[in-house]
Each structure stands twice: as structure tokens, then as C-alpha cells.
Image 1 (spheres, helix red, strand yellow):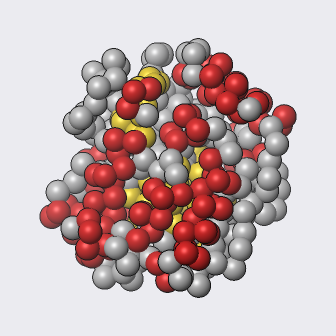
Image 2 (cartoon, helix red, strand yellow):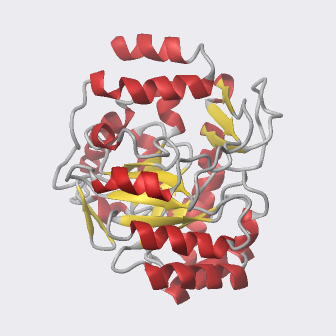
Length: 344
């Protein structure tokens, strides 16, 4: 009841202001702690997670609410994106709700406090579930590939994993780094600085089959530990919301199908040998289960909480446990990829 009231209030004020208020309200929210069960226990690149439901990057850009988010039911949390230097991002307004579509459009542009400030907060985080950092490049950098390596170098003793974000549509020409030659060089620099930290690669949903195949090959060649599929989309297909013409990346319900298709294609391309994390439109246990059957070892969510509240992670993890039990799976890993052909 209290959560529904809070959502009603937050969804009727400016979206970015509402997000800031939600972060500041976390210390006063009832937090159940990580959901766990033998069936839900998940391992990715040596990381032990109590459940496969994670928080996607962007919700806590600057790691200011990390301790509370670690107690919100998630199995793992990703903060950021962080860049070497602080930057304000794009001008406001830059976040738009599409209530009828259960979606959002953002054009933040990697607004963050910079890696030094974020690193100080990460150094003081509590023990618990795995915590990762999404890493990016400054908008005006002359060496964007170098920026990724620089952030990795600073963060490598402070996080459990790092995500290379070359798929945000809100930094001009950033997605050009998904091309094979540029991506190979960028990942080589990051891997040289990672120490023992697992590195994931986050890709766009707006890729052809050939591009997906190429990226999978480069990821395998460079030793990347997993791929996150996907970031936001530039597509506006099927939208009915009043704000559908805004520039930026689209997230939420309309992203579910295209992102899951990319996920399944990646699973096919990698023959199930590389851990995949499914993101895009996850707002229920059924959504999470569909991503897992399409090839995801774990899932992440963000926009779903805008419409369903912070308790969504807890509800999804519990519901997923029940669905796995109903279908006779002893572990969530047993279900990974069992429905991939439905998406190809």
C-alpha cells in the first residue's frame, strides 16, 4: 500500500527529480535482503550470487545508495556508468516516462561524478552480494578507448566485475566502438588493466545477425567473461506514448522482444559457452524466466521499478523460484537456453 502510494506520487512529478527522491528515500524503505534458495543460486565467472536477478546500471550512477540496494532482494548490483572525469551529461529534460507503453526514454549522456569520487564510495561499500561497475568514456575525450582502461585501472580492486559500455546511444559515436577492429583494441586495453576482475561487454539491441556474430567472436577472442544483452534501443516501433518522439535510448516493455531475440542469437553464436545476462523489459518473474530460457544465465532490470516499485526484484526472484520448481528444474542453470529456439 505504501509503495503504491509512493509510486503514484513519484510518477506524477518530473522523472529525473522523482528518481533522485527515490534514491534518497531508500534508507526508509523496508528492505528484505537478498532472496536466496538452492534453486536460485547462480555463478557467473566465479561470482557467487544468491539469485540471478540483478540491478542494471543507471539506477545508482554514482554508488550513493549501494548499501541499501544490496538489501533490496537483488542477487547482484551494477552501478555507474563511470567516466574518468566528472561530467554533467546532456541538458535537461533528458528522462521521459511513456506510461502507456510502460517504457522510458533517456538521453543522460553518462552524467556522473567521475571515477575518483565513485571509487571512494565503492571502497566503503558493505560486504554482501557481488557489485559491478559500468565503465564508459568522457564525451569530449580524445582517446575514448583509453578512458575505459583508465576507469578499469582505478576500479579493479574495488568491484567484483566491470561492464564495458560501448552501447549507450547517448554519447555521440560511442556505438562505433562496437565494430570489430575498434572493439578488439578497446577490450585489449581494458583486459590489460583488469587484474583478476571479470569483465562483461554490454551491447546494443540494434544489431544485425552479422554484427552479433562478429561481436561474439571478438568477445571470445579477447577473453571477455560474459555479454550483457542489451542496452536501450533507438527503435520506436509500436509506441503509442505521447513522448515517443523524444531522442535517446528506449527502455522498458517495448524492449523485451528485440533484446531477447539478440540474447537468443548470442546464445546460438556462442553455443552456450559464454555467460549471458539478459536485460530489457524485465518486469515480472515470467519475463525473467523467458530471458533465462532464451539463454541468459542471469537477468537485470531497471525501468520496471519505475512502474512497479523497488520490491519488484524480491517478487521476481520469489516467482522465478516457484516457476523453476513447477517445471522440475533443480537449479536455475538447468533452465538456461531450454527455450532458445522460440526466439530464433
